[in-house]
Length: 137
Image (tube, rainbow, N blue to C red; front, side, top):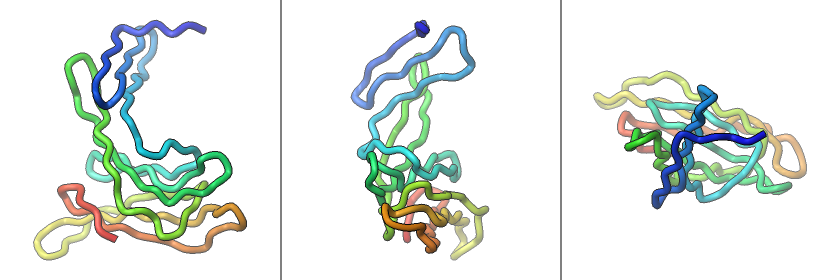
């Protein structure tokens, strides 16, 4: 099938495309490590993308993006986050609600299980996200 786009806008972060016949919009941006079977979770408007596979090799990379409305659509602003200590594909990624620490609210991002090319992973990793989206492990 042929997709017809209302607009295609190129920028230094990639292209943004909008379909005339769909409610879905394609917001492109450059991630540093393209991979499949990654875990995805949202924390305070940022989407976190962790682990995954570049073919058959488990990855530990973690990246996040925030969708910013730009003229004519949305743009993904990607940034690298601290990597997982155990590379894993098919990882479950989830975010828990904020807790208060030293007068600021923090959320926790959890990476649970997965597969590391040889066996199932039985570890759990966590990363704290402060209200400004700054992560610490």
